Length: 191
Image (cartoon, rainbow, N blue to C red; front, side):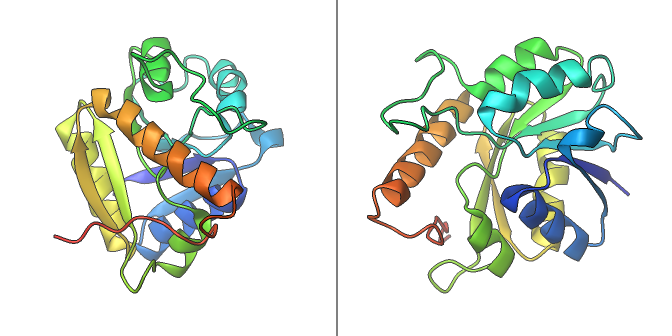
């Protein structure tokens, strides 16, 4: 069975961990002080702010080879909420994949807020976790794990789609920061 290490014990890390545990998976949450220590699961979820990703990757240098690494970040300017802070032809997930050529990077969870993941409901439906990546088997395993935990998940395409997912996450956060929607809002795909 797939094991998960979630780096970050904030709202998103604990919400994602809860879903995966509800699905029956082995989950280890790692606090900032534990970064770089202890065993690492088959799948490593980076549940940290975009600004912390570089330090986490340095702390785990070499230990993420062969692992599936899930980037949940939205690379936005959190002071102004006026733009993504990655080049227009890139994404945080693409930048992480370049830094981890021996890992499989997936983009997921960035278009969902922690309260909707914890309640497993948005607008009367399960929220949808959109998953992008270039490895279909890795995406399939993550989608299956999320669904087993009671939340919907959908393959959003290749890792190139991470840019659009980050734009969706940015829009959602900007709307919530501007008090146009609540932090318990979100997306659910109706199929």
